[in-house]
Length: 628
Image (tube, rainbow, N blue to C red; front, side, top):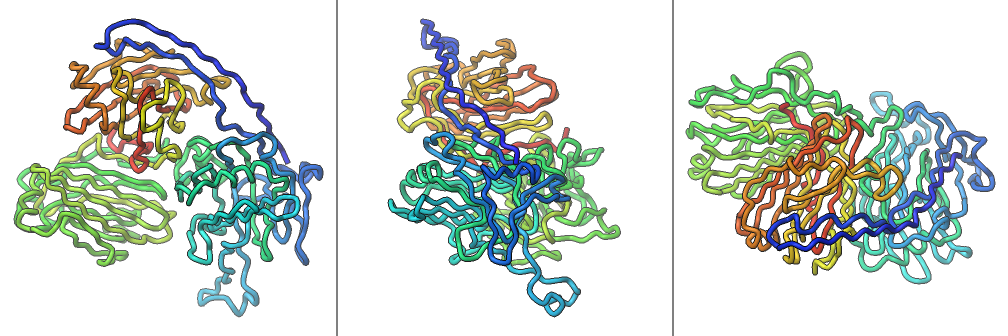
């Protein structure tokens, strides 16, 4: 066992800078400085490096009847030693007691749950001669906490089952007797992040949110129990027990951030600089000779004669396409068509179509099921044929395991919206697939900026500040969002303001990949909604904007405004475009750029200042443009 400890920083630095100017310009409120408040802290990591490091003063190893003691083994996929629990369990002093937790307790770890062959494997072999495996154990606790006399206990299982029974009440979610979640699949390595807060809980697997939801009431007693129970067990707590391997078990005080939730690289598993095991730094989402127009402007191209580029999509990657649709108007089908197929040349060896779908709720293919449709806005086909001429279309294709989910939204020039939704199960889900667009007496103009591969980022803090906009400067923050050198970040939220100053809205900080206020932390720049900023890489000449000028109206319009901030990395340059759309439709767009580092990951986070932000978690993601 290798235990890594990190001492806490009990430092508070407060710098207040004031200036007196009129309310008419954003420069009237200069930077307020940095203040360091109690935050998430890593307490210990158990790496399970070797048998010699299974310190008996830390780990009490036990075996079940006819079982074996937990032991360190080599794992080829993890490419490192791991702790194997096969017929045994570990009892240890609860590591959370190293430091008092405040409002949350968190942990991350790598694990692989191992299913064994059923009894009499020869007789149970299937028709292909493959040995059948036992069903996944989703009930036995992976982790268990208990007090001295076991009158209070807490368990967590592979079903995401939290079960607390205490003298001060009980709490339970994801009971496997009610349903199987499928959160943690067996027989493969997964990176898992767990957080239990005073009023909510989160479960993340391989960097993807499985659930992050309010609890049914106050569960601060559960957080206190995690932090104070004297004993912590691995693979213990019920009459039955599972078999699994674990590595890099890390214990945190308070709530972890997006950085800890994100899947790191591990052996041959992938992660870190990859998505779904694919290195997104080098993976090409579109080949050379990009095609920006599909078909011909007179809509004369016949069916299956004119195609877009191939878009190759790895597992657990999502893709978005944006284009203007043109139609001959003859039939409902004379618009865009989307094909999802195997990773092969069209019509060549191995080529097979999972499905082809059209703009008019119709399709076919090997994985096609006509029951898998839903839609909004359809019904008047005469109007539909007219509306599709010049319609802006966004097709969102999401890969979630074996499921491919497509949402296509067409907005007509007159504002009418047609949305169709389709899903299909495409093989096992770990393969690369291809998508391409086809015309049929139609013509498509691709939007270069609107076509990209993307990956959801974990959003654990859904509200920044308080609804009454009373949170002061540098007191309330969003999650950290890490941006590798080859990716960009999209953040989406609703802005609320006290309305007192131009600066009482959103603020964005781009900094080094370090804890705020900690060792190595440095701010490249902080910028505000009112065309002002500061920081080590800040240059006031690097601004441009559209729509600004009337500051009285601006302060009013920012209440309830929908804001999208894109932070794009192009080599050493970081380019930010922030677009705020007021409730009345007025649009304010500010653009800023700065020269930062030459390739290391950076962080971005949001700050409020007498303001309040409601995150749109479903539209927060890192992305890579298809067309360069």
